[in-house]
Length: 193
Image (tube, rainbow, N blue to C red; front, side, top):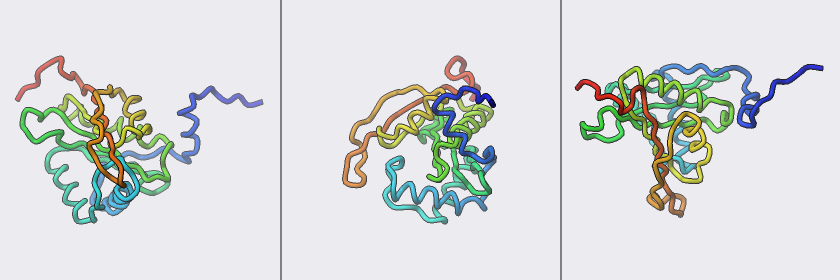
C-alpha cells in the first residue's frame, strides 16, 4: 500500500496543479492577459474598488509607470497561460514613504487555490527586499475577502485594521482591510538617503 504524506487542508488543494507555476517578470506581451484578469476582477469582484474596467492602453500606461519607477511586476505562468500577476508600487506619493510599497495580486479565477498567489507574493516580497524597500502594505478590498487576508497572513503580514464602509460597489458598502509586514531589516535600521 502506498503511503501518502500528511498534508494540511490548505496544501491539499495544490494537488490539482499539473505543474509548478513559473514566476517571471511581466513583459508587455503579457499585458493583454493581465488586462483580462483585472477587467474580470473589476466587473465581478470586490477586491478592487475600481468601477470601470481599464482597457489595454491604460493597463500598459500603469505598467510602464511602475517599471519606470523602479517597482517590480511579475506574472505566474501555468499551463502556458498567465495564471495571475503581482506588483508593488508606491504606497503614498510623499517622499517620506519612499521605503514603503503597496502590493497588488490578481489571479485568473480558474487558477485559484493552486498555490499561485503564494508564489507570486513570496517572489514579490523577495524582490522588494532586494530593491531596498522596508515595509509592504496590503490594502485589501472587502473584509469578506478571506482568501486574500489568509494569503497575506501566511506570508507574514499582520492585521493593522479595518476601514469600515469606505467603498460603495454593487450597491453595498465595503470595508478595506489593512495588513503590513516588514521587508528586510524593516525599521530596525535607517537606510541611507
